[in-house]
Every structure is written in structure tokens, then in C-alpha cells.
Image 1 (tube, rainbow, N blue to C red):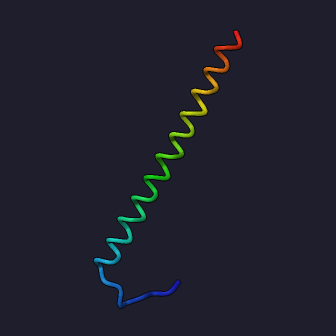
Image 2 (image 1 turned 135 degrees about the vertical axis):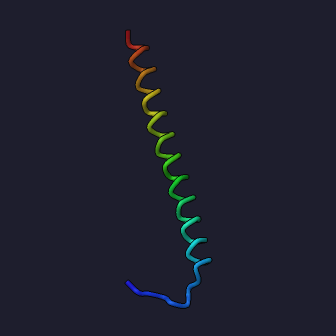
Image 3 (image 1 turned 45 degrees about the vertical axis):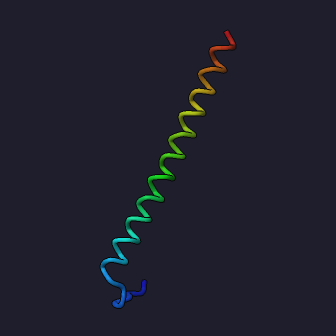
Length: 49
């Protein structure tokens, strides 16, 4: 790992903010897919009766 002393605290804060936003968006997509698959499964099982 390299250390860049020329990077300011503002750059780090901006990087952390963008990384957190990207992670939250990915989490939302994954949760949405999980809910979608769950609903599809429930609907298919309900239709089989």
C-alpha cells in the first residue's frame, strides 16, 4: 500500500463519501433483486395449487 501525504483531508472525505454512496446503491440493487426473486417464488408457488 502506498501512502500519499499530498492528499488533503477534503479529498479523503470526498472519496469516502463517493465510496459510501456507491456501496449504498449496490446494497439497494441487491436487496431489490432479493425481494423480486422472493416475490416471483411466492407467486409461482401460489399458482401451482
